[in-house]
Image 1 (cartoon, rainbow, N blue to C red):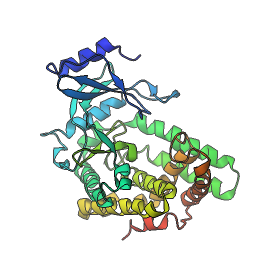
Image 2 (spheres, rainbow, N blue to C red):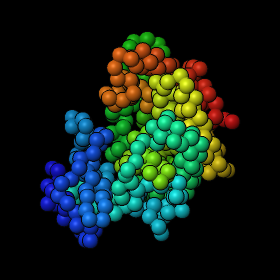
Image 3 (cartoon, rainbow, N blue to C red):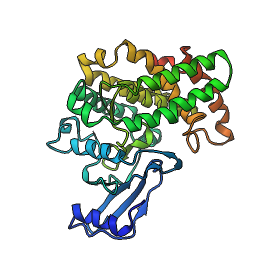
Image 4 (cartoon, rainbow, N blue to C red):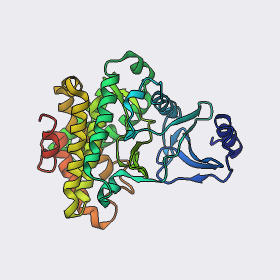
Length: 353
C-alpha cells in the first residue's frame, strides 16, 4: 500500500524539521520501478521514493519492496565519513542520503535537479565523451574498494533483485530464443540462462547494478550524478561494465551518422577510467571467466530492450527504428552464442588492450 500524503509529510519533516514541506508533491516520470516524487519546501526541494511490492510500471511483475533498503545502504555509505566516502569526487557521486523508513519503504535524498541525462548533454555538445573517464574511475574505485570484502558481501546480499533479474531477463529471454527454433538461437538460449544462474552465485564486489543512461544525470554545475541504487548488490563486475557497454552500442545504432562515434568514444573513455582506477586489480576483477561471460550479458541487455520485458518505450519504438531493432536483435543473438560481429568487436577488444 502506498503511504498517504500525511505519512509522507511526517517522514520528510522527521528528517528535515526546518524544511517545511509543501503537500503538493510532483510525480516524476521515468520511475519504472518506484513511485518518485519531488517535494518542495521553503529551503528548496528533495526527492522522495516509495517502492511497492512490484515493478511500478509493470504491476504484474512482483518485486521485493525492500529494494530501497539496499539503495539507502549504498547512499549512506557514500556520505562523508562513510565506508565509501573516498570513492566520491566533485565530478561524480550519488545524491546525498537524507533518510529512510523501512516499514513504509520510503527513501529521502538530495534533489540534483535541474539536470538532464548525461548522454543527451554529450549529444548536444555541451560536454565531451572524455567526461566518461571520471565515471569509469568512480565505478573502478567502487569495485576495487569492495573487492573480496566480507562486510560489503554481507551487507549487500541483494538476492531478491538478482532472482527478479534472472526471471525477467535471462530466463524470459532464454524462452524467447528457444522458441525461434534455430541452432544459433538455441545455443544463445542456453548460454543466456547459464549466465543468469551464474549471477545468482556469490560475487566479487559491490555493483551499482543498473548502470544505464537514465541513471546518469548531468547537473547544472557540470557534474555527473548517479541515481537509482536499488539494484546495488555484491556481484560480478561484468554486470556494471557490460550493462553500460550494451547501452552505448544501442545508442550508437540509433544515432545520427555524424554522432555514431560519440558512443564508442564514451565507452572507450569510461573503460580507460575503469582500467586506471582498478590498476593491478583489473586482472582479478576482469579475469578470463569474466571476459568470457561479458558478451553474453551485453547481448542479453540488448535483447531485453529490443524483444524482452523492457522494450516498450525505449530506443527502438516506431517504424523508423524497427529495422535497427531487428538487425541489432539478430547481432545480439549471435554475440550471445559466441559469434562476434563488426557491431561489437571495437567494444570488446578494449577488454584485452
